[in-house]
Amino acid sequence: MGDYFVGLKEYFPGIGKIRYEGPKSDNPLAFKFYNPERKVGNKTMRDHLRFAVAYWHSFGADGTDPFGAATHIHPWTTDADTLMAAHEHKLDAAFEFFTKLGVDFYCFHDRDLAPEGATPLESEKNLAHMVELAKEHQAATGVRLLWGTSNLFTHPRYMNGAATNPEFAVVANAAAQVKAAIDATIELGGQGYTFWGGREGYMTLLNTDLKREKDHLARFLSMARDYGRSHGFKGAFYIEPKPMEPTKHQYDFDVETVAGFLRAYGLEKDFRVNIEANHAELAGHDFQHELETAASLGIFGSVDANRGDPRNGWDTDQFPNNVFDTTLAMLAILRAGGFVTGGLNFDAKIRRNSVDLADLFEAHIGGMDAFAAGLLAAQHILDDGKLDAFVKERYSSFDSGEGKRFEDGKMSFEDLARVALSESAHEAAKIGRTSGKQEYLENLVMRYVLGVE
Ligand code: XLS
Ligand code: CA
Ligand code: CA
Image (cartoon, rainbow, N blue to C red):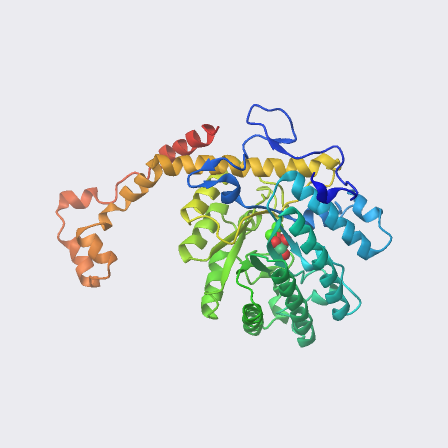
């Protein structure tokens, strides 16, 4: 595993570097589709996909659910005498995992990396200590920080919200935490900083001044933005939409809602969206819908790659494995120009009863293969051009003549109406009766998906 790991405890013994073996391999610890250096279009797979591991699910979560105690007993926690030592060991385990898996990025919340202290000052010191160590690990392994964020939802003080809390003292506490997390992100060369509005919403409108809370959220975000920019943060600020859970209604409901909020408060230049597949589903949308909406509004940024369960209404955060979905997602991402600062962060967790050391690897391998296969199919769709040609043709009546004048804003409403009034009875009977060809297009996509190799 390279010199860097010599002398460090190995937390995933018996598992070596994960390699590409191709679709015919039956080795569960090998990639079937993800071949990092393979060129797809103009970039390698690794540069297209920019995979990141989510520190919280992979190294923090312990399998606890509302019905039962922890099932994932982490050696990096049990072999430590102090809380701080446990976090140091967790960092070693995480970088061993990143390196063996071969991902280029990771993402964290401040409280994943370092424990909360008794005071805000102590919390900052804990974080600063862990950031120093993380910096060394990054330098030694080449693994980079995709984005950092702040956990503004676990501590009881945030039970009524953070930036939108009705008590000013809580808002100030949230600011201290975000400031330190932005500092950590800058120090570690993070390419983005995410705001997920964990409890920025309400449980009931009966006790809520909705307008004031949204104003406070916008004020808080612009102050954090100004702080980051004036301290050298050049990356992207992301807002991660989610409609509900933990609150009944969250202000960052979905991409369109976030876009409206950003524009209403003049924040659209600095903020983009980090789109999570499971959150799209909770908002009643397809993942593809959220991605294309963001692209159409010019705010597409990054992705939390996971999947929900269509038969229940909560955030199950499972690893992605549906290649139809990943194909349509990668198609939207390629059409949007690909990732710049963003990437595919596996905000996903293994199940409570997945307790083998290999499970965490297999989960990520499956997710990476699902997106690699999706990338191949999406690139194939673009190269073949049939789908794009169909869509282009569908709108071709706006490419010239009166249709073009309409699009260019060169027509009055009367002119537009007059186009219809001059039609013959024969023409009027035909208008609009053009097939949308949905089944043909679905079959076309199926051919690309099944043709992946
Ligand atoms: C929770 C969110 C969270 C964010 C980061 O549902 O997905 O994990 O991605 O705070
Ligand atoms: Ca997420
Ligand atoms: Ca989630």
